[in-house]
Image 1 (cartoon, rainbow, N blue to C red):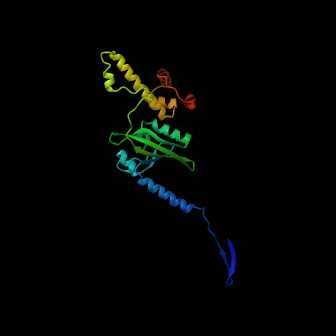
Image 2: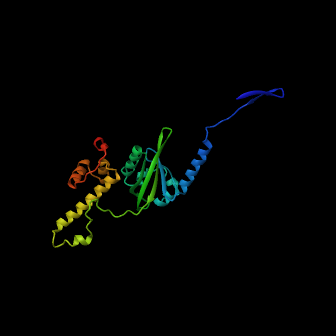
Image 3: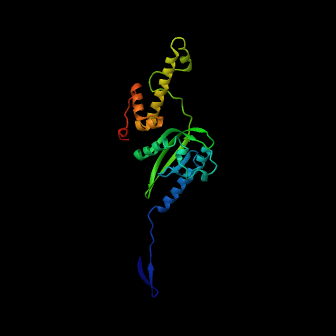
Length: 228
């Protein structure tokens, strides 16, 4: 502000200055929002209570939901994965690592369909609130294969044992292979967090630990297992 005199009268000069770059950031934010709406990947934003705040058109297409008003306010874990399991794991991973990438799970459509998807996400804090954004992409999940060097037995391999091995042994071997594959997949999805893996598999931690020993599965398990 500065005073001066001109033509016998007093005048004042006021200089109004905003934060540098504010206008540019507003334009950038608008571009990001518009590109997100046009993205071929489904996008959903949730608050700390897991309720959906915003989605794009691709999310509505993938979930077979007719309009935004039918999904905003609903918990995302009613749609993504199993309620209270996968979304909790995703949010915990984001809080710990800052982001999560290519997390394999499934999405439940409005009319009872199930779609295999990969989820990536991150979070921002605005004021005193935390917001989580997820990008969801439909994927064709490859058939599971064991982590061991021995290849999975095909149906022909198993039926070829008939007459040479008792049926109960064939069934036991098949069940053990499937159980081992599922445990290894859960550990991979939860980044070797045994507590989260047990929850995902519907097992108690003690039962999971017993199966880990039986299948001789070892790894660099999360230290948080012992504190949960």
